[in-house]
Image (cartoon, rainbow, N blue to C red; front, side, top):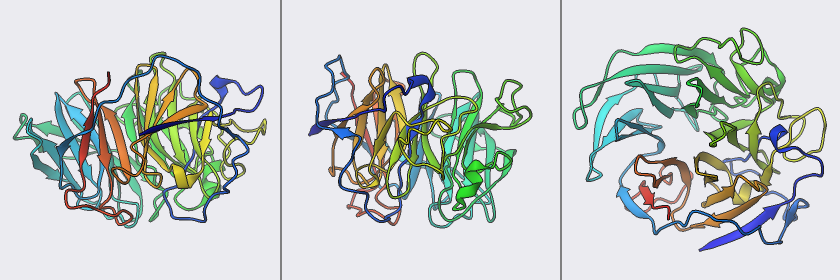
Length: 366
């Protein structure tokens, strides 16, 4: 079942200056029941992908966090076991390797993964920091293994929560990473700290010459715990973010922009900060991974236990799918065949796992 809602943006807020809203995975105090920026007005009519009935690709995963594809083969990270798994065409999982040095607790552990030019990039929590490393992927489908690790970036502040952790390569070939405030909100407003930021780097970990702050990996700042990142057909970057008690966010990410945390949360109308294009209460959202197919963003939600569909031509509106049907949703990606793969996350200590959890669901787009 799908429902549609609309969030009204403040007058005069330009789309190019607004980022994705934040949302929180923590079971914090409930958000206000009255949303002054929400209307029951129907969203505008436009052609939209038609979502098929979800099909189970695989089951029995343990606290899975991220999905990536290598030459058509699906790879999955498991947060607590630090395992990288590969799936065969029948959906059977096989261990590719275990990432050494993972020592996260709470929300930390082996988090996001991405693939480029035969390397698997991983973001993980160590004993006192978050790190990005890469591994050569050796062998072929069904017999993949990890080569020797290479450090890309160390020293990202870590904690038992607010670690960020999503990584992805943009259309410019650069590596982007989301870093949470590591439980210390002032980090987000400190441009010398890597925490509370979206970072942009070369595939080797260097600072690109066209980054907004010379010699710095900081691409945008003022974030609490950004989770999902994706790019539309124009090359614009979008991001989902955990808020605290009031608003989760959907943002359009602009280089050098300050998204306001902890000074503001959600749509604030403060000219010193960039507002989100859409906001949700944490109890209905807690947005995690996101994917863009055509002109539509799909956002997986943890606490809200639903999939949001957002038409990027009118990003203040969203449609809800599969509310409470599959539990917590951690990630969503576009598979090589053009379908959506959605990763459930009921075995992470905050869900109510069923006998087959956790699963990957395949959803055809009509």
